[in-house]
Structures are given as C-alpha cells and as structure tokens.
Length: 92
Image 1: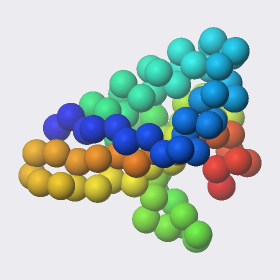
Image 2: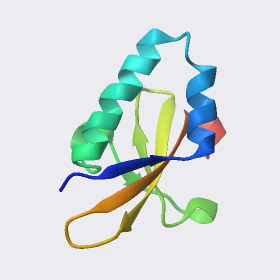
Image 3: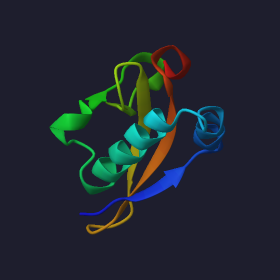
Image 4: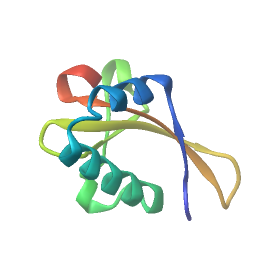
C-alpha cells in the first residue's frame, strides 16, 4: 500500500527552519520516501508513542530528528499520514 503524505503546518515551518541544512533535507526526503512506501520499514525505527502523544508514531530521520505521524485509514487501499517533524526535544 502506498500512503498519502499530509503535512501539518508545524511540519512546513520546521522544514523552513532547516532549509540551509542540505544534508538534513536530503535525509528527510529519503525518510519520507521510505515512510510513504512502508511506515514500519526497519530503517525508520518506527515506534508507537505513549503519554500525551499516545496513538501516534515516531520515525527516525537521523540521530536527533524525528518524524511524528498518525495513520488514518480511509479504505482498504489507502491511508493518510499526518506528519510533524523536529528534533527529539521539539517533538516530544
């Protein structure tokens, strides 16, 4: 199944903050491609969150940066990923 990526306004603001960090932008782009194909690909180290973020998932972009998302299934063949992005301290 291929997932549709839906970016939050917070995600868009976070990407604007890092626009000069080309290495991080490349890593983010690669992670988003993998995430779109399989949110639970082992390379992403996806895990379910607890506490205030219960029901959401986090995936790694690099050692410090995370993608936070929620799976929303619309039918048997499609689902949306609502996404936010930031450093570990910013998103948790």
